[in-house]
Length: 268
Image (cartoon, rainbow, N blue to C red; front, side):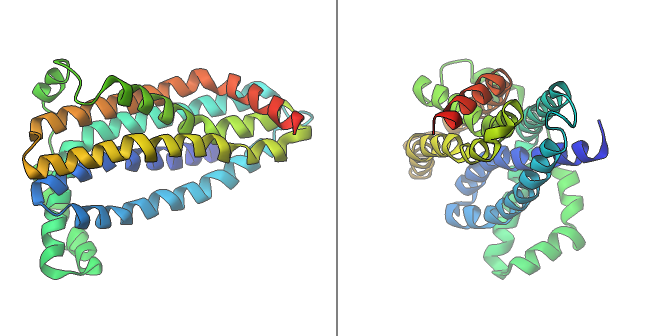
């Protein structure tokens, strides 16, 4: 693995790590009773994810262009995409492990912001006034009980779980499949690259219409006492697990999706 691919894998890792940690923000919002503030503060990390994505796409496109037929072979490029999808799965697993620690740290960040109402002060406190030592003090692994309890029935419905698997698989593979489609047929590579927005758009619609509203409603139910926090944690375990399953499924969808994109691009 060369340095360029390693950096692209790192960007992919950051994007999916932040996406997974988003689940812990709802837990922090429930504990602090400051859901709006929690979501607002998490938008700072979302900016990091979007910035990573803005670097990821052109760097990956350049790598593909440098290895089109006539400049290289297809197998190394397919291997590159496999590595990137593996980075997405590893990041999701890492995010799942970090959720207990992150939600504790995020709870403290929310409380600090409520007092000082300043993001710059919050950032300074995090890095220079004991924030890092606090991370060390509260660091912990997920409790085995939370994982074992998830086996006793779904925290969310089977329909939502399967939708999350499908949505995450499509969202994860979308850009990669579109770029690889351009490798399979360079004559339609520009058209193929634009079709990634359709795949990602479908995944985004599924999450926005079905998954996010369900979790938002469940979050409010916990705050109002209609649903227990234990039940909500079970839902988070199922959704994180289905997210991981989606990134793994993306490996199987990569080549078929690229072939389908080629056919669609040719027919336009």
